[in-house]
Length: 336
Ligand code: X2X
Image (tube, rainbow, N blue to C red; front, side, top):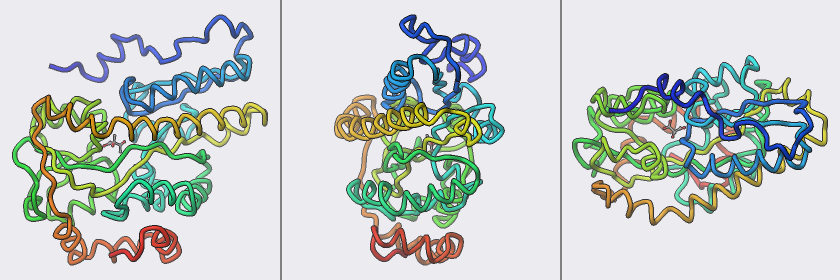
């Protein structure tokens, strides 16, 4: 049995990763920021975030106290995005694809099979694709810091069967995050996608509301999905990352030196987290296999053909527009 999100929050007294500043920073914080994310405390994102907020406290001499709330303690991703906009939460690490419910171009990097390796991902996201997306996010009055955190290349898991071909996805009851890109992708595969936030994912799988889901190995491991999923099919069907989003009014209240110190340490933490995940990669598969998961690696051509004939790429080229599309193709080569 797992605890519900609510009882977990009560049980932990909504403990944050910082739990107040060390005594060394005796000066009372001038600014206190809540920083939310959906990953459990042991995910490299939260490990690096904890280091970063300590470094920020130290370098600002305690003027800025950033309190990190992992595991959606302040609400699921959809709710937290509303809180970020209203200012109830000042900082939030969120998948661009989920942000795309508000800023459509933020889903650009998640287009099915757009990226085939990390080298291209980082060139694009640290280059013109990332810059393009951040400029669109800015129009929604939200600041996105420069360095996107890695979530990862996504793989499909199932309680019932390995996914070998696009046909295996027909009618497949799959949990997807709350985002039109994911729904559209799995509709194109003729699956039955259900939008469920990450905080409700484990329970949805456990109670068999859905038979499968798709996520990077680090998430499959950290959310303990191996307890409720048997098969892992290595499809690498999309790459997804987390932007550090900041409420614009809260950011503008910070003096320039604190802004600069904060951006520096958070961007550095994102770079360190990318390296952590890369280092964990091969060992993650082994540990998931040791937990009983069975892996297969399907050929992806059939999946791409299916998306093409279903009109998936045409649909998204229309939604994103030609400018966005050509920025992406600069890195990925011709799409669709
Ligand atoms: O919700 C998910 O599946 C996750 C954890 O990968 C995202 O944040 C998009």
